[in-house]
Length: 306
Image (tube, rainbow, N blue to C red; front, top):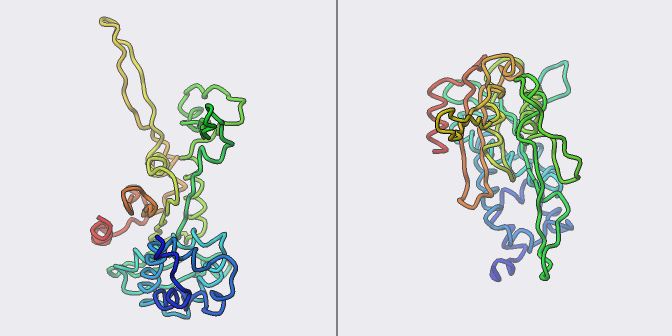
């Protein structure tokens, strides 16, 4: 690590030529936060960013990269979400024959979506979303023991109150403490997916690339396929208690009314770069999509991330 800390700005400029070209060498030499020690201590991440920018550059050109990402990569507050967006688009660009960035949604709208790619002849609209789930670390820590160890803890609802009401289930007991989140993480993820869909066209193949900065993939799966509950039953003869895990049909991919707002969503490409096991990827096609991804595109995408 000491060797990494000693990298000079000139060495960084030489190694990360695409990144430097996008943010601008003059800005890099004068900025306050993206200094030599910051980049050197995150060398693997910047190598990934450099590789992703080069892939996208091969399809859209450097001018489009600068126009789309310069201000976002210069801003420390948006850097890591943009880092994930670039990686997501780069993933798709691996199997795309053409790519456009920041595509206008329509003449009557001031919105745009992140990219449009041509994959095996299919036109795919792409919107990138990220989620940084900081539970329970967003709560103040409790100091435990003589060594004053900081312990972060809290509780979070597992079933959305609206889902419970529709299913005729009793709501979870009300918690009045400040360390409880009354809304499940899966509900927050569904809201993010709906927000992504609002950026995408009403017709065509719509793909959301979901970069999990921090959080659990199971929360995305609950958002897509429905919450998981445990049903307990007592055997009248043996008095043994048996449990059964049941997935409730209240996800975005539900064939019924709950999935109606998500019919335009063709699939979700999930990834998590900051994982103990290295980068993780999974693709979730929507079985009830109005415009599903063609089978050969799904196969190619899954082979890419498999």
